View 1 (cartoon, one colour):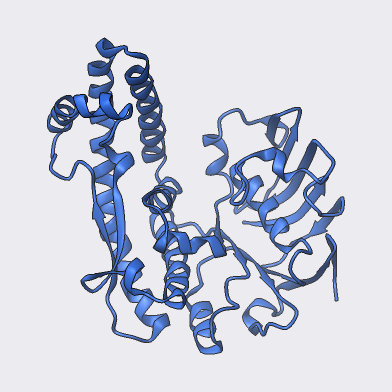
View 2: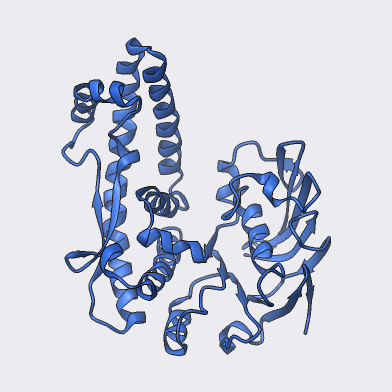
Length: 361
């Protein structure tokens, strides 16, 4: 699977154009602010219907415009081509695959799997509990539609329970507790299983790239860690209802779980240097690639956005040697960066990016 071409109209600073991308490796070289990351963002939007940078679609419109569109031709594994179209205008988004409108984002996220490596990934290490939960939920959702459905239903019930708390509808809360406990315990079980499998990958990958014997791993601390059944979770919600009413929110549940990156017995967010955290965030993504391939037998598309600059030549080489098992990869580099033949070889395209345009150098 690979993108054969990518088209833009009124998308950020990118010139309206159709750019050929039919290669295993596509390298974008240019100074900051020229459009390299915008190009990767466009690919991501076509894969998932949302951005890895902007929370609001209107922020992706070109300055002075209120609409944009993206299009792509994707070569599928069965040898056929697929057309994806994304339009945004008048506050609404429209997604079509081969002309058929996609109304549920669930039908899009399993279509063209991609994984993005970005500078913001360091938040998986030092950021909020929410950012770490987001990473693991994304990792599981990529290959497990049932987990994705449970997570979406849990969030819906949680919103309803919180609304009942704030609006004083106490009689409805026991009904929501039954649903929240059932969905929450299923999610907690899956998260615990995923962390075990993820650690099997992450520990070895980190040691291979860092060239150390340091044991880096993820400790899972569930909010309902003292609960093993739905009944126990429901009873806990009932026992802590007075606190929830006082706080005007549901204070326990899988939406409060923590994933803590540990370095031996220390919290890595407190003990690690910025360089170590940056490296660990890259290994998080490599482990995500390996996890997806192991669970699906499929190879994702990679979007690698200026994340290698802070690695020395040796670590960069080790990183790229572990970055395998993908169907296509897009890399962004600054003009002065040294990159390896692996990403600019026979099956590769290189574009010089300047002021939103893409030219073969």
